[in-house]
Length: 414
Image 1 (spheres, rainbow, N blue to C red):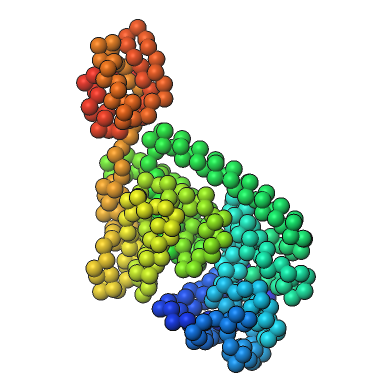
Image 2: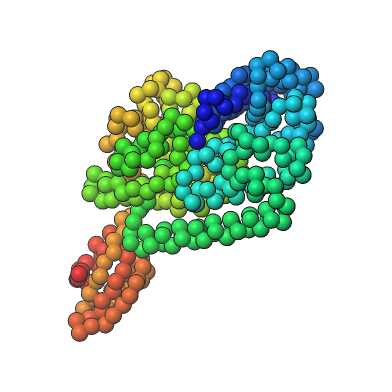
């Protein structure tokens, strides 16, 4: 959902360099975020400071410089590359007379424009309301930012102009609905486990080519664009491996540096698809000069979500566009999702990383071998047991190793 050319927002991007190593990359990323939201970037400015000013984030001279730039370039929106407090937002707007949003508001706006499923819309609305709640200081300057344009998509004016109690009620309602979605996801995961379905999650930095990879491997037909956060809603498709076994391949929302905490919380049930997967593919765009940073950020977020005990395969995508020298010494499967290069090696690596294969089976133990059925209770999942004229029939889920051990004692039946 982009603004038309006639109403395209002209934006000034502003940053504060506090001595952090990634300031330049973060501002470059902010430019891409602004482009994704439909803005035309007129300029990028940054002030080096030991710490942000509590009242305005930047100094008074820098504010004046911003004001003059906006006046001379018909700028209608200032986007700051960090989260601002309500006081800072209000004071910057007062000083520059230009509507101002921060990085978090911009990302939330993009998510609001990209959410397609009911769950995605609920997640975005919850994140926006949680973010906006402390900023609803009245219907004055704080509410003037809701007049339209980038940073205003989502819940809408009618919801945000109501009192705090109503917003709290709405947040509670959204949480209840998303909790139910999380329970449904949990039930689906349990069913998949009972049926022996193995899941492989594709995670990675936004715009790393995750959806292109899913499409190439499974003909999923998922939206794939050269835009940040082209995919928000997880998509699952069956993938057949060279051995003939099948896994469920799941595409997930992209990560980004300084991903707003409100979004991580709101998208927890979606992100759990990655956490609960049997194998995780950490896909990165190795043609990017900062792909190592992207890998680190994704790995840190996976650790934050509790996915440290899973097999994680590093997948270096866009190998056809990468400088060979830049990826020297980086362990990972090298592929091009666009032309299929490296797919055999990727499929082999997935197969190698899979947990011990489990199968659903109905087994008959003759009366003399009933004692051997303890192997199943110790190493598998028993769904039902029934004594018949021939012996004990057990419906169970067992791994292939256990199946090999008990085949001399039990007969497989339909």
